[in-house]
Length: 342
Image (cartoon, rainbow, N blue to C red; front, side, top):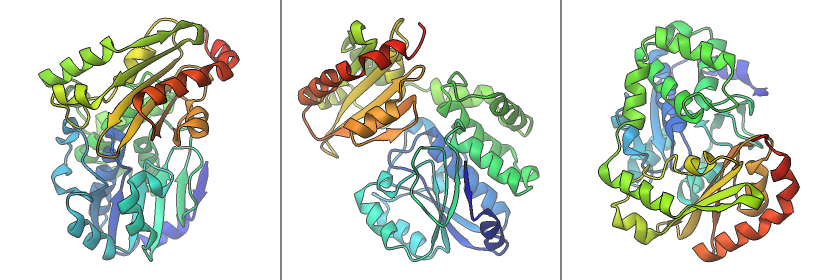
């Protein structure tokens, strides 16, 4: 764990401040949940907090309280830059390095004259003025709960904040099934329920809000599933044409890679998705046991994340990217064989 400048940050926040809260590009439940929870908490403390996300987030997270006040940097550029320019401090939540916000927004943050405060659980974070980093914690939302606890402010967590925090913890733990889910996680979640988080409604809002086309896209993805049994590996591909055919919306591919990992005998899974906007192949990696997809992605696909969940990218074509991926597996044969008892 890294806890840097906490007392100084605590003192800085004793007076009302203008604060901007930022999550990573293509924000997930943990990023938007932690950002909105922190906004509500800081507002209660007398600050003026504004959430600025690099771009849009999935429609099944739009119901979160405060979502309507969030700026998207790519679409609301002037409002976003104005909020950043007038802020006294920027919180960076759920990402460990500035390039995770995208090129344009990174340029704005590189020129920012004031301090950053990072709360994040990914490996190898950038150095900023105030840091709370812990790779052992399952989600940034759990870290934010503990941050509020360190400030002796748990009584300020109401149903609104609890809902945002519960959402991030639930989504980043795969509904509490991942190895990073600890007994402490469950105790925190129990307290969030006691404080007003409606666990059944939150789960329904996130996981039971599929469109017809999203299910058809899932069917296409599963029909593209390929298995490499000698490497205990499976992968899925999705092209731009396939996405267009099923009226792809942001968030529609969320979680699909886990279907590949759910196969018996598979300990390494990947999904390769064509992204025409960025002109890359976006990649999500998942693993079981000791096989680190964080290291694999950092070494070969300009990405990173956690040991069992990471992202990456490729500037090559879909065919070239998949060919490269398959060619690398022989280097990791022993690790893949010994990673997990299945």
